[in-house]
Image: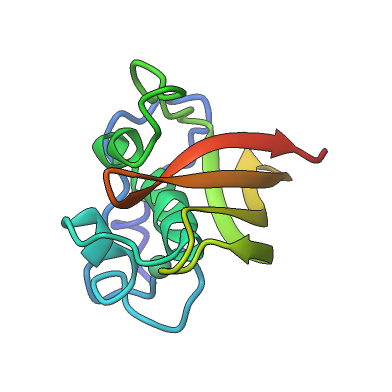
Length: 148
Ligand SMILES: [Zn+2]
């Protein structure tokens, strides 16, 4: 097999290019759908109907490094001025562990999840309960309760 197309592994190199997002590839959030059918449509402008859908689309926005989406789905009261992506971090999978409320009939909701990543190649995970609220009719991320 030709090695011509393989890229050298240089973990210390800072990559500024966003990871490629192929609309037809499996959605990074783990649902059995393509990126375009799943989180991609929310990134393109559709409103996420539930807190879980918003949570998944925000996880996927971290994967594809869509800072604009993360900022516009963040409550103005807790939104940071910008989102920085750590080039050493690669998100590798999302598990939704629990949800409360957060449907079309609610104005608040929570999603408890575990987001797996590697940091400089070392596997780790973020375990968090996120709180979401409706703002101008759309679900936004409000705050986090870190579990561990
Ligand atoms: Zn998705």
